[in-house]
Length: 380
Image 1 (cartoon, rainbow, N blue to C red):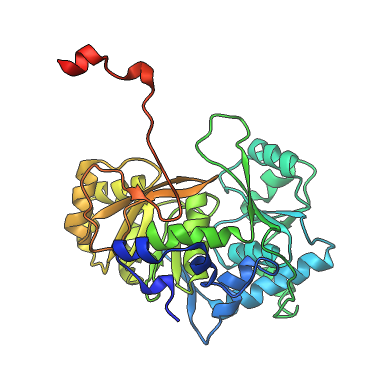
Image 2 (cartoon, rainbow, N blue to C red):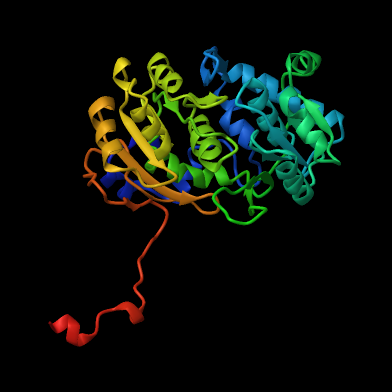
């Protein structure tokens, strides 16, 4: 059967897209659906790689679908044994690592609601969010345990080698029981001026809608080697950088620890990345490092988001990375609505132009009557 992932052109996107075709990319139905199954469990096949993590200290961490599936199940059993299950909030404040992804997908598999949090939060930032969402438990690392405990009224579990060893004997599979409309992730938005950002509620079926962005905003297709250096505590890093490629059985990668553009450039070379999505700031920092031309690349698709990209950085990307960097725009609340369809050779990418409406969304511009020129001025 032909699927949406078999098409790459802009014209085919307009011709073949449908909501039903999005559902055909998944195993589940509206009545029985689980993000962890769709992103991890169904792609277990030998030693297929799910995640490549470039740590700031120079380490590379490679995680297979099989290992992540087993570990997520063990986390799910741990939560179940603690009496945590459907609709209970579980905060996850860890750097990208096996522990982070196992905790995140384990909570979702157990039917709990995962709440990603930035590791840069101090006690006050943690307290604000914890008071709002009231997590039954918080997974964090040894370095942040003190801040989490100082936030007050939190059951803090430190995820380290000792913890992973302690749950290693738990079953390697877990019988999940969730529906498409069950809540899966509670994500606090970025870019707000409010003391406490809004919490966006994502159900398990949200990943079906996400495929619009995967197909037409980041251009993910089977065979890609994907990478997104954005933190998975941010919507771009979690949904577009992690869940979207994994849902399609595509390996993805990310950066862990204090950001270093040269370390990123080396990882992009060593991992042979073909599809990169990043914030405009990441591209600018790679350009400003002065080291980009010392590495070799295999890029076929590049996208940016978060802010406009300057013309110097756009030109740098095309010259050094070998392809244009294409824009995508959306929000945590509504997803991607405008994109430049990476991989579509029949769509001209014009410098300075925003993009085209994403398939599955409609956009229109309005000009208020008060700012339209008068008939006399139009005539002149």
